Length: 265
Image (tube, rainbow, N blue to C red; front, side, top):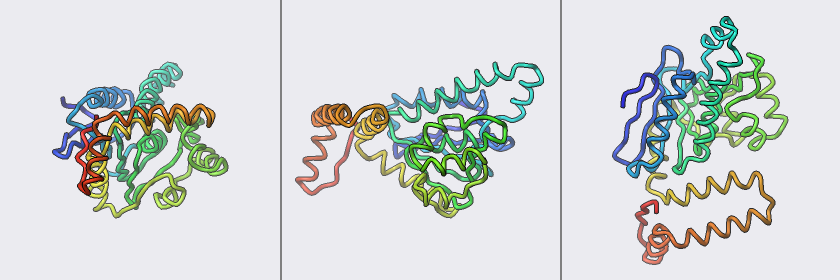
């Protein structure tokens, strides 16, 4: 299917490459883009030919976040709250879906990742950034709170003071600073970005993707459970994992000193 704001390419390596292509508007996360991305994620979730997602931008931007012109028009029509309600229902659904997605997701941040664009990257599992990439929790510039899960993601990954700095001031943050804070995995030259990100995605696609999905699920559960409760949930899932085909493949391959060919089941 053809989309206006996104392109999707299924690669031979079982990786689905999702690219923002609305370069004229710096790849905004507007309502139309949200609808397209929602459909793409729904289509790929149960596609057995896709074992990892790779999300990137094009032009100067990964995603510039919200559609400022759309916001202005909603104020002029006295529909600002209705517009924001419609927009956030879509975007928050996407943020939730990315964190719960049963396959690993790699973000290749090529340029500006502003506001919701930054938090879209943070919702992915692995983040590779160009050294030209620039990030910002720019919501405060519009007197908004850090949406798209920003208030959930940041204080769990960086100290409170640093999260407050990013969110209160909304200043530009370099890829190198986020690397040093542990928010992203790797910073590379622009010309190497997609190659390196694809290498990561292909490695994940060849891995035990069901185990990855269960790991993501446990990460999220750990936020709301006590240590005692969480360890029992983790133990039960480990027992279930010992009944999977990938477990059998991994154990036999390690015993035979061979490379495992996981199937994700």
